[in-house]
Length: 214
View (cartoon, rainbow, N blue to C red):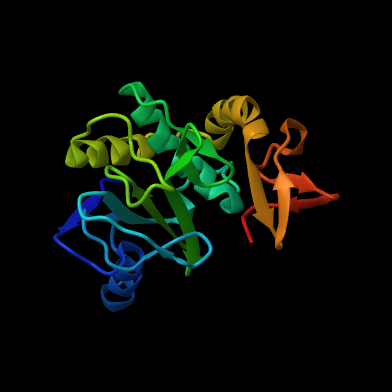
């Protein structure tokens, strides 16, 4: 399942570019689109992600049938975010994943992940700050070779690590960091607690499973 890679000098959104590309040419092989200049990126709440030239933005597409068979699609953001986080940590970064899809260092967000399912395909977009867009956000704490990072990331995807394996590590990290974070679900601010996290990646809040920010 080797990835085809497209590197763009500039694009409005790697996610929208990839979706339009598949609509036009059809799906043939796993594909990843990468740029360091994204002018209208999309966040997990469909807001515009503030972008800075030189940061890392990429989106990829895979057939659902090729994903590890224990992956709950609602928790795909956790899975792919943690794969990238694993690589960054192996290189010395102190970043961690805030449930369900944000990259953090200390108390500042440095990136995020979005996923979309359409026509038996999973689309995933990730943005990572190499430079700070403003004082409210942070940046990656290590130097990286972007192309090498993309190669390592796609190679790790191709190992088909089980969701259970990845989630076990995510759960430990969540328990270590959740007490310092709150999240917004259905317009309500929720303080994250260890006991909220379920084995499928959801949070149990007021007796209802929640898989994403709303």
